[in-house]
Length: 357
Image 1 (spheres, helix red, strand yellow):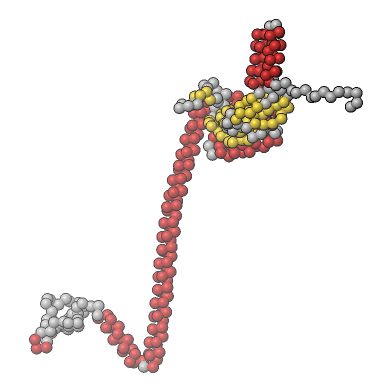
Image 2 (cartoon, one colour):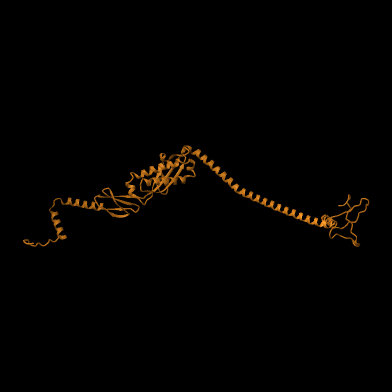
């Protein structure tokens, strides 16, 4: 512009010039060691608060002035220092558990439990007004860490209260004998479903893994009576099983014998009917022959009857009351012995008296 002279732009100072200026100013500053310590402390704080590490089984929740801004997975991460951003880690990959009625002291080769009983948690009233001691475990995972931390106050206590309330209701709807014996799996399954439903409605960010009944026993004062009842029930079941086994063995056998008898009776009936029909047909045929030639048919029937009768006789003796000598034996048997001269040989012994045999 007119009336003004040209001023070349100033060049930015180099690093060496900056260091020289800082050194000169530092020399003129009194109390230099204290300021150095402060600066070094500030630098260390910045470095220390600018990074964080999340373990493999955890998830990091980064908050900026208390507001959740992001989540961080396992590994090394950086954040705004001076506690502008803070981090809270949640074990999302670990299975957590809550114990009711007992407490585990140490886990290892031999798991140890506290000797002090927690009867206020485990004693429950059943549907038939009996009291039983129920110990159980609830295992869960943190599914949503943000809901777990910020939507419910004291989430662990909430899980315990919900689990205990629902377990008492489920046990209270059943008979004590069923809970002690055959319904343990059903109780655990029903309790898990209802606990999960309530936790989901409360948006706790928790997903149940399992609900398992550990030890279900009657109270100590009634254990002897309960053991006697169990022994009686086992004897009853054993007797029923033995009776059922015998029934399964005897009933098929009886059915087989009955079927065999029925088959034999049906066969015998069929045989008798067929034989009767054959005899009737034979009689009708003989009657037709008799009507055509009565005399010949009568003689033929007589000869057939005598032939059948005499064929079954082994010996025949003829005795005359007026004659004391033995009448020669008539050899009616097939292949009988005949004496020389064509006369039959006499019988080998005295003839019996009293007619013919």
